[in-house]
Image 1 (cartoon, one colour):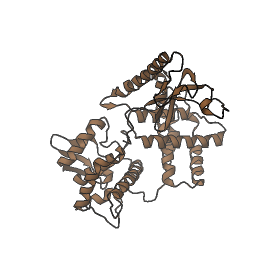
Image 2: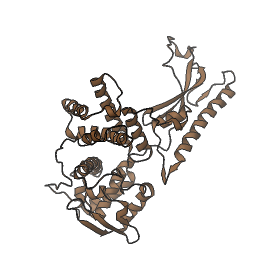
Image 3: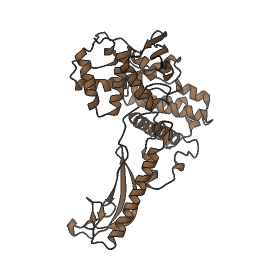
Image 4: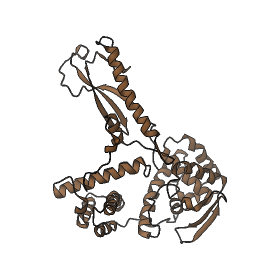
Length: 399
């Protein structure tokens, strides 16, 4: 899940005026020649490739993206530039059109750079050894491109990996480390380092997540000690309000008019992630499921023939639950099934291999996702001028 970006990035030719030291005072009469690059942008990051040409400012038409007619052989040059850009555009479209199952690929900045620089995609993601940070970043690239995580989670995890790398460099004077060199003492040192910076337990636990995830993969590949990875996996700081589905003392509820306002605002929401979270909220309205049961709902619980949720073990109380699905809730499921039917969990918020019987891991995962949901719903509530913060808890008390 996550914010979906534009269908594909658009390339633009640019003169790299920053690469040549120009001391000309009158730019209109400047005769300095600058290299011409083709640049694509994805999520505020750049993928660039050079061309063989250099032009003065007066020779290049930036608005029309062409060489001006004053340049010798300008028609041939413009044709070559067009061929270069069209070839890259076609490669991007070809990559995005290829699917895995029923799911279209996502384009990451590393993949875009490989396409723009005409490098074989088969070289992407190859890890030469058991270097931890290479593996960690590639794991995030793979998870994002396969739609296992959303863009914000992808960016946040990379940020945490970069922060851990800074800590490792501070401790070891090296900015690389092998997976089997990471031990519990290093992790505890990282936790203390984050605490000294004033980070709260919830922030530190988020920073540990991609580290644990990478080490788990390294253990499977035989690149890290299973015993050490197990000890590190237990590194978790208790958070305030560390309970699933905590009942609020001051219960709020939505009126019929407020629910209608939510339905009316849905088509106007520009952020795909927000619409997805509102889908979950509306699904809960029609089923009465708590947030923990929305997050842990599996496709195996859904019977489209009988239009029921069957044998769902509710998290609070650990009792089996079977309830009928209303037409609106079925409509939401049908929409999600098109994109996310390859996931174990309906709304794709949890790793497929999460052990729901491990109360500690489940609590950590549900609370982390619940915070994201609450933040998005709070912003939606502001848009319809609710006098209180919108939350999943409101729906269970709505008229």
